[in-house]
Length: 216
Image (cartoon, rainbow, N blue to C red; front, side, top):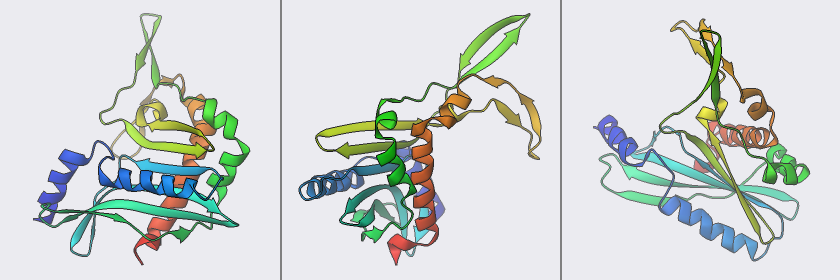
């Protein structure tokens, strides 16, 4: 029954992070900005798996990161579904100290580059009868994460898409390479400040989730 509920939830809500978790973090941003001048980061994952926590199913989640005094904090917002997916309980979990500050430090050091840089679309180069052509990679759903940065009166948003990270490699079931095509923008995207920023944030969040830090 729980597996059926998870499938139902995924079908209806798996395409985006919307609703109360998003609103909870937006309100948290407003509250923090009243007392803190440092940059604030929100991170919304869009391809997370639904997982069971006790008698509930943990749905889509978002995170907020901010600095207050000498401490860096992170807080998680999620929606909980009961085992039949009949009721939703939106939750803002306790704030925990973020010991791994690499993502936040990278933002401070590369604010301008991150703000002004955009990842390029995923493009695969094909050659037919000696003629080159470009095919845009399309996935559905495509978004991996949406990152918002608030700094003073400014706010900017960065989206990371699966299609932008396509390396042109097609694998066999055993992991061997079936064939490889040139992914025109792949190297630019993975070497960009935006992608490095995303990777550092994702690594910090993944570590905390593995430690179950938000649910102690």
